[in-house]
Image (cartoon, rainbow, N blue to C red):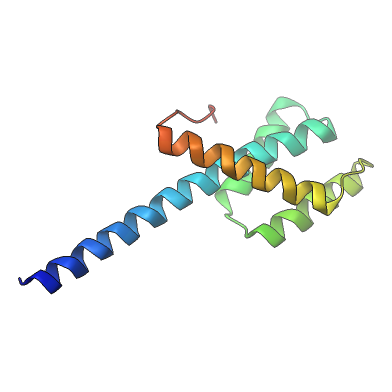
Length: 109
């Protein structure tokens, strides 16, 4: 294997690691976001964990999450704008990224 081949293999491994880290960050962000939304709606702990788990397990994209949470808030008669939801998503992503990179354990599921 020459230098170019080793570089390609190294690049491929780095991409795989980056994707795995990004997936972990999103999962943690979605979990935290689900618990936040559940607390505003007033869900019991089991239902809050269920909502958070759905956001983690189904891995929806940000637009789907914002719309789904907006609908949940509307159903619960809780006024939360899409802008606030998206801002919270960004804040939770930043926190989740720092936690994952620092090796901090996630909240229990």
